[in-house]
Image 1 (cartoon, one colour):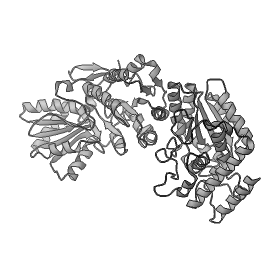
Image 2 (tube, chains in turn yellow, cyan):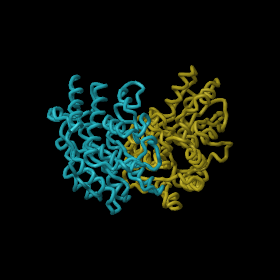
Image 3 (tube, chains in turn brown, purple):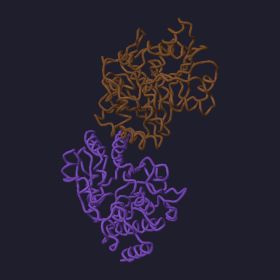
Image 4 (cartoon, helix red, strand yellow):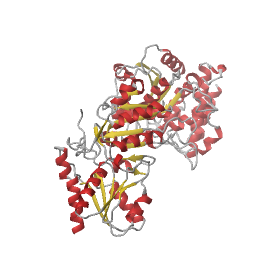
Length: 319
Length: 284
């Protein structure tokens, strides 16, 4: 079994993306998939095993994988292309930009190891992928939270016409959102819990962390709302403004990404444009190349663990 | 050859005239803007004449017809040349050349799919076309299509690593429905291609990557028709490449004689002179 994110005691689902894609492909014969030598590491091997004739192994060649996905889309197919987020965003950017986004082709780029989800160091840590892709017109950007989110988002992006970049948790993926009254919709933020002291605006795995931190802070009498924002672009600006405009709450944007150019700055800009000025804090990765090491340690060091999130919120409230 | 146009299996003379007329359309567009990649268009006109009037299956009035062969222009700056060929082929109306490069024109200076009927891809960021062609060739096979995909690329694009990813990929996937056509005019932005980043020995490289390779005089109509026929009829399950050695500004001797330049300067009065040269050649 490949390295998976520590579920922190939560139940897990095995390879939710691969199984969800199989389910979608059963009803849609236009779906094909490509990978750049990372099928086993993006859960695409599940699709490859079930649909060998619809799977293309492109080898360790991200540029041609992305270009070929564009070519398949031109011929009427809906390709899902997988690799690691670093390779899609850094190495294949021009091909995603010009071959796919500029013509709004129906290609879904699904990438494992987003943000800080490996201890391999900067070569594998896509801490700036959202910043890179947010500037790209036509591209929908999704950062799902957990297995439930990944399953629903996979179905949704398969039906959506146009290019999508989706961050992926792979392997044994924690499952949290099934406990909430939640449905993934592209472009929609969802309030998972309400509270009068703090508003977390969170995306990706940081929504799980925010939910756990909210439970802990509740024991200390601190009431936290959690607004989950799985779609980074187009951003649900109206919902974000509405929630942030409710008086008296500390707004904490939490993301598994550098503090530059991700959800935090996107939210800040929307609030400025809307004339909304709450107390605003960011939980995000520093503007640094991060250390290698053990992932739980790194999440503590860089402030993404539940302990770190809860501690910082308390500090901010006491300041 | 156009679909349903069996009469058009033109001989060498007719193709020569087609090439002449493609050059003329290109010069007229160049004159509209007072500039353009005219040397490339003139040099590549014979190849395009053979593409549109000998090799390709298409319907001029239905550029998105499913049964067409696909022609990808990877080198977007050759758009002038492709518009000229598509005007000659009846895909674009001739009077539209007056709009070339202007506001709201369907004929922008770099080729883009969203703007122009018959323009299959957005080229211009060099090293993209062949990779997209790999995917389209896979797609055509999925649809059990017998059509070919032709990807036109320039010698400069051989410097892009992505081109070689695509070369390797096409052979790996045994894409016998893919024909790459390289315009080898040995001139790129900063000088001769061989001195900028040498791609030779080119035939050996493509061969070693698993392709069927031909290298021909790209300004010799008979050599081109023979090469395109051989590429289509080749039986082995491998992709095919035709490397076309072309002369910049071919067909207009006084421009051809000018110092070799990636972006050929033409004085305002010279456009008409060049068109006159072509008209005399065409009348012969």
